[in-house]
Image 1 (cartoon, chains in turn brown, cyan):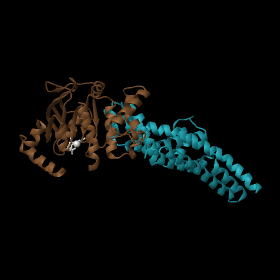
Image 2 (tube, protein in one colour; image 1 turned 30 degrees about the vertical axis):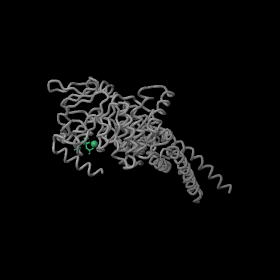
Image 3 (spheres, rainbow over the protein chains, first blue to last red; image 1 turned 45 degrees about the vertical axis):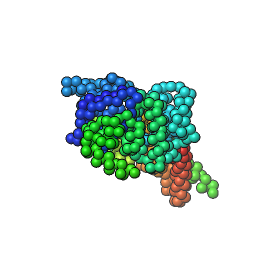
Amino acid sequence: MIETINLCKSFGDLQVLKDVSFSINKKEIISVIGPSGSGKSTLLRCLIDLEKPTSGTILIEGLPIAEEINGKQKFIKESVIQKRCRKLGMVFQNFNLYPHKTSLENIIEAPLIVAKIDKKSAIQLGEELLHRVGLEDKRDVYPAYLSGGQKQRVAIARALAMRPDVMLFDEPTSALDPELIGEVLTVIKELAHEHMTMLIVTHEMSFAREVSDSIIFMDHGRILEKTSPDKMYSNPDHPRIKTFLDKMIFKTD
Amino acid sequence: MDYFLQSAGYILKGCTITLKLFFLTIIFSLPLGFAGAMAKTSKVKILIYLMEAYTSIVRGTPLLLQIFFVYYGLPIIFPGFRLQRFNAALLTFILNYGAYFVEIFRGGIQSIDKGQYEASKVLGMSYFQTMRRIILPQTIKRVLPPIANEAITLVKDTALVVVLGIGEILRNSKEIVSRDFTISPFIIAALLYLVLNYGVVLFFKSLEKRYSVYD
Ligand SMILES: Nc1ncnc2c1ncn2[C@@H]1O[C@H](COP(=O)(O)OP(=O)(O)OP(=O)(O)O)[C@@H](O)[C@H]1O
Ligand SMILES: [Mg+2]
């Protein structure tokens, strides 16, 4: 569904992604873990065109949104990139809900003005999605009156409303109070049961282990290891990963 | 009492000019400020520089000087180009308040979190759709209080056109004061300005209330 080849991204002199190559297949769920500043967010943001890669290739369902041929970046029209990125949905750490719109309005905004479906089907779709994330009673409530967990569930519903083929999550629970993390993870787990293709940046180690088909460990802008959850958590190839995980698990328990 | 009513009537006549100047200025300078803010927050360098020059010159010089410049100065630069007194005053006020509104709208637009743009982008919205549906509705709410402040200042600034001899509230009251050697016309004028500003305050309060539903 998504493939990157030698993806590089620099901010000025700072190289944030260094030759990142990986792919995610249909129905696959991959978690991305690693220390702060290792480039996890930047990787996700490049995939959905919130950042322009410095070099390398990104394919979405086989079609490039960035392409390197013989060491040169090929020009791709913005409108084409945007169309290809519509296959992806994204959920942010701090929700980014529209404060001036109710839960329902947040969800149906893009279906109405981007997908241009009629208002009646949009509302029906919105209500279905609210039901799916367990918030049908918050239909007409503004984000300011929702808890963090509820906000993130609305944000997930909003992303799903555009019927993406792949969902990208950037630390969806990091801004939440501990007691609210569970409700968001439950929604993501349900998506996993429905075989949604997902790429999830997270610090929730037991969750990652439970839902993922494989886990990517990023360090200093590189993929240090990509392997099965069991191997990642029991005996990763790199001692550095073990140190990191020991620290994480100690911290979260 | 009769005398009082008579003076009040004369001053009230000046009030129509004041109101006309006020409303016409608001009606034209708000869209001007909005357009200027869109230009200033765009990515077009030349527009940004033009707007920067416009707002710094206008905001950095006295309004009174600007009135003199438009009324007395322009005909010297462009012989034959002489505006009527009221039109010269109106043009100056629109350009002057437009510049302040550019800055208010620009501040409002730039105060919106960049996450709002990112969320809209990943949902597939264009820049235009994002501005119209997401950014501007939130901006309006934030700029209402500073715009209300400007409107109140504008009510008071209209008195400046007295220097062109336009018969608005202040000039008419001053006329009676010098004729009859009494200060009551000044008190009437003060009351009028207070009433006008009270109206402005009430109007903006009700607008702010309408936009406060979401937090
Ligand atoms: N827009 C930007 N401009 C400059 N530097 C940036 C920008 N975005 C990210 N960086 C830098 O790139 C590096 C990687 O950032 P990134 O956000 O991808 O890390 P991360 O792995 O997501 O970290 P965290 O776990 O803290 O979210 C960091 O050093 C960060 O400071
Ligand atoms: Mg991050």
